[in-house]
Amino acid sequence: MRLRRVLKLGVASWLLACAAVLSAQPASAVGPLASLVVHTDHGPNSAWAQRQHYVVLVSLDGFRWDYAQKFGATHLLALGRLGVTAPQGMLPSFPSLTFPNHFTIVTGLYPEHHGLVANGFLDEEKQARYGIGDAKAVTDGSWYSGVPLWSLAESQGMRAACLFWPGSEAKIAGQLPSEYLHFDDKVDEYARIGQVLAWLSEPEATRPHFITLYYSDVDHAGHNFGPDAPETKAAVIRVDGLVGKLQSALAATHLPIDLVVVSDHGMVKMQGPWVTLDSFTDLTGVETVSTLLYPKTEEDRARIYNQLKKASDKFHAYRRKDVPAGLHYNENPREGDPVVIATGPWSIRARAPEAGKADMPPIAGMHGFDPRSMPEMKASFFAAGPDIMVGKTVAPFENVNLYPWLAHMLGLSAPKSDGSLNILAGTLRDGGESPAPVPVAPDSAAKAKE
Ligand SMILES: [Zn+2]
Image (tube, rainbow, N blue to C red; front, side):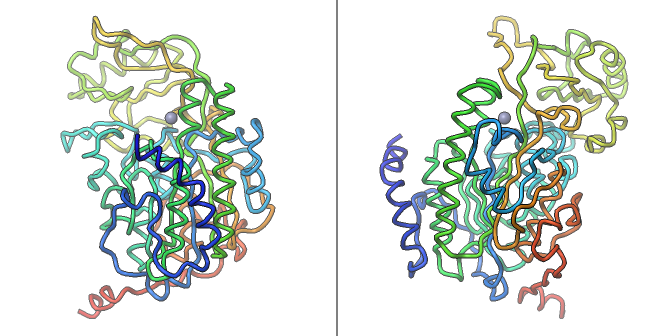
């Protein structure tokens, strides 16, 4: 609590001072969150990396595609006019949940390809569960596949810094970000901006070129009060103000920075009471995580599927291999089998709480549903900067396509992913044409000679 208070008092003035002196700042500025920043022992930016542009990637959790218009988020709308926006929204990947989609945005892979198939799931081979609140799992790189942008940058001699992003606390594809923080949503929201500015005021040798920033306020309000509530509007306006402050502070650095603001998913007002799967089928002895089901035998899988498939119009049940291809949710054993998918804004769970434990009513707002059949799940996309054309709009596109686009702006060679640069190439000033130079790190050059 004390840290928060000190930050609240000091950060606003610090922010102003920092923006004013930023370009003249001679040495490394530590920033308001210095005591929380974890440093990885990486070398400086290569000479090649120092010549590349900067990308600040901001996630506004749960910021539904239409919130900016609906609630008058003037800074975000202005950012879109200055660069590019998707007025009809961006399509999250299924399931439209926070961890799966954040990690899709930075890897270009559908959740079943990067491994985070939900916010919590079971890996039967590992005999272990992943959960977003489990610090041990979250920081264990063996849960994740793909090459997140920060790892891509680091592996090509470019430093990256993450002020919160799912996966950024784990060593993935052999790399951690040069600087990152362990997730703590209590960290003051202005201090987060101050820390981003501090990173950008580091000397060229250590200044990160790829930076992430995260705000959860809008998601929390949407869950607790629903997407149409005045509390959600207030959170949208507050977060929009933060984006405005960040944008002017970034402009004051006079660095070539592309500011990209996205969300992971939308939000829908929930309807009706709980739909409890074990009222239709016996789940005794079956491991479950949320609505994911992990029967141990083929016999049980078939039995549960048969009992669920016509049980309710509130959900579809599929054998995993039969989940519609467009959902990209039929390959990974972490998805369980059978797979249950809601047909609307219904609160589905595997089991009711044990007898004697309080049963809470369903939450006001939720996400996680199929974004192709439920437009409320669509996410937001606004971006502007030296690599981005002015005044562009794009039709709804899948968020897997952000990865090659962001990598291109940073000049990085991206590995093959589920996304394609073609989708957003028209928003780039170079049309996505200029080939990304392939930097050769000294050690890989030495290895190649061996
Ligand atoms: Zn949420």
